[in-house]
Image (cartoon, rainbow over all chains, first blue to last red; front, top):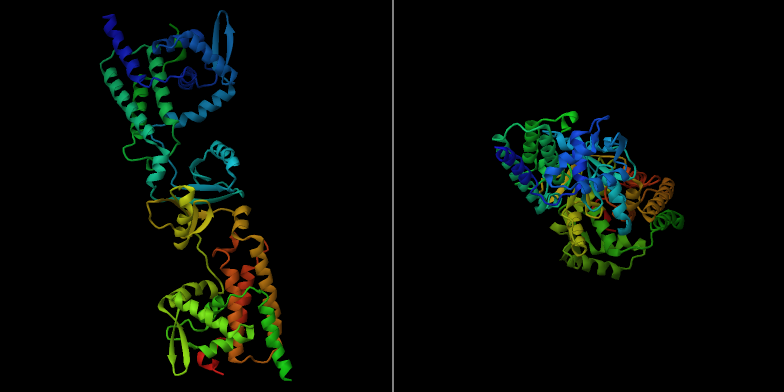
Length: 267
Length: 267
């Protein structure tokens, strides 16, 4: 029966990794953000290998990814005996904490009031830099030189701002915010989540390590879809957009799996 | 003493026509809009000549201007005996009526709520036409593809709109709405109005014809300043902008002069 017992897990992995383009460093980011986001959390090199192995990720690829993330100041490592332990740096903790409401909130509540912020019109050569700065400040670019932000505009005397109610959102804006490939990405994700829910229905209770692997993949594919577009209410997306449906299905899957303790992940 | 009595009038004309660039058709528009804006009002060719003569406008220039305005469908004429009588057409009446609140209101009240309207971003080649249409709908262009309108946005599904409060207006916008030459135009106008008020102080009571000439010039120079920028509250203009001061001084001058009846203008 061992092969049967395992097939649900392999099927699940197959189903959830439908999205072939896996970047290992990005998977590691998902993994830490999901399993080891609290200060003091640490994961050993061998735990990382055990979690990522079922996704067919080679140990060398994990090592390269860890190296990159350490260089980026996102994780730090320390040796203890013959093992290496990894944890989020202060900056990694802050970034994971900042991203997690968007990733993990089941019912996102958006403001009723929004504002547009229009900085001084610039020459073409300076526009990209301005857009970069505005996006870093949390604005969504809705047209050239026009930025949308939540709530009432902060006091600033360099921009024309207006705070208030948005009207009906025009089709061109919806298509710009969510192009067809983004709509398709959610359709694919929803299909995978539905299939995974079916598999899980008839599966034995997963081991903590299996849970860690499955959660990592789910969070990873969810993050990929989510961060391909700005964080905006449903009204900004085209009809047939499955983002909110996927959100609920992701949360259902994670609730179903539960969160494994880090100490349960040592074989 | 006849030369002394006349000198206040000549001085006034000199003072108020500081702005050399007089377009006769535009002066005639000011004249009708001020003196003969009501349905049924008509002015004879000889009245027109008598009103414009002191401004050193030649009768041929008046005839050319009348011809142009008739071709534009703005005025119509009819013969009565050897005289021609002119009146605003239906379209001329409507346009004059539409412009007059902006020209004649002493204390303009602006809305608290404004909206921005952002149509679909277009190619360069189509932008001018879009801007033209938006301006015709009463919008002020504040940045490329960004239009400001009063009150809550009308329901329209082709634009991103937001209705609400404007923040502090940025300097770049004020300078765009009122460039230095526009600021200077009001300074010049105010100076002329102040000087004219002084002259009037010591002048004999003007005749109805003198009043008609002076009103025409005042309304003309006022319209020229006024229509060089969009109709917006003081907050949109740079510090030191004398638009509102000029508005009060124009209204004072017109009140002081009074409105002559058309029948009092026949010599």
